[in-house]
Length: 288
Image 1: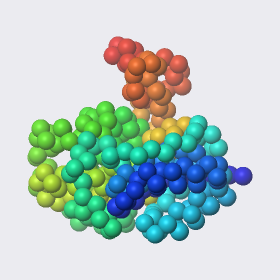
Image 2: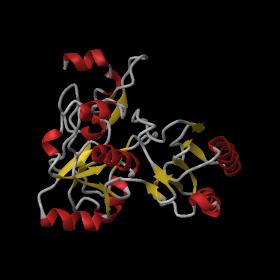
Image 3: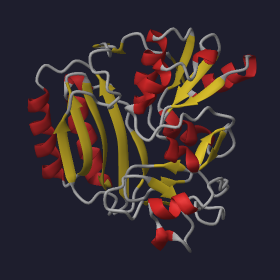
């Protein structure tokens, strides 16, 4: 039976996140679904996987719940061992930007976010004016794939974005059209609202993120390279023609392979070739 991965989120007010957590845990366990799900007062965010029948059962149950009826599920191929376990947690933020009091959410989603663009609308915008692509992911993710000529903030985690914006690192873009993007759409949805709150005047977000764009244009559009994913696959390609833009941190050989730093206290992800995959450490990175 083929394995499938689901990427999904929904911004919607939830009166009792703990009750949703318990329901999600029981639902996934009953279906044999594994992965990571985060619940907050502002909605739900998850990446889960299982056999096709299990995944379809999960979608059916989710859509029967009124608050999640319109969730946009994004599919990709799995391997069957993509998640070692199930994790369902309640947190203050669906995405940890460190600004839980700033985000506003109603039944229609994020209030005051950037204008959503489908992949086709993105191309129409790019054809009509010069735009700046703004990567809403951690910097290491862009090491193996990004939109052409994108601004890639030097941030190690999502919480670093607010500090970078507030110190004026991107003030020169405040009057320019900006398109924020991320893996599945959730990080850039929050990021676009944070930018608008700080005086950026023309902000867009790629609806459905890179995942939806890759489904639409494969490797024939504005995206270059592989997409980093937060499961055991580490990265995915959109076609057999995917360009390899990553460079091994040890020898600079082309590669799209990502591995965890070998130092137990380190959470850095490194771009590494097959030859040096067993030598991943921050110390080696510093010497490279």
